[in-house]
Image 1: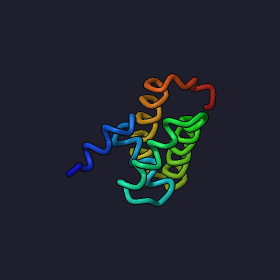
Image 2: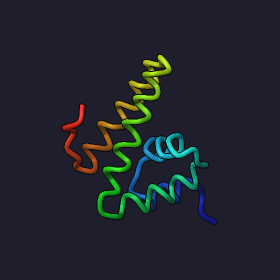
Image 3: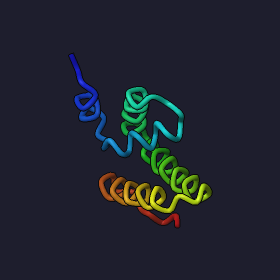
Image 4: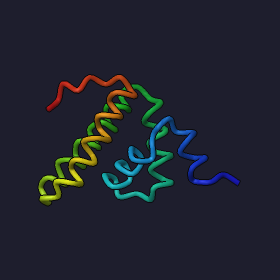
Length: 90
């Protein structure tokens, strides 16, 4: 039997990145892991994930949750570094 952690390791994503997808798409995390895995392995998919994380930062800022926004900002920085995405959006 596969555990959730086993599934995460198959995605080439971190748990926080999957959580960002789940929040953005309003999906259970296991479904977000599968969706994220598909995105991470298709052309342009990493940019979609990048934008989802950016949207989560913006949503937290609109809700006046600076600590949450800072968390997602750190997730975004790790994601962009790990997946070699230029952070030209500010």
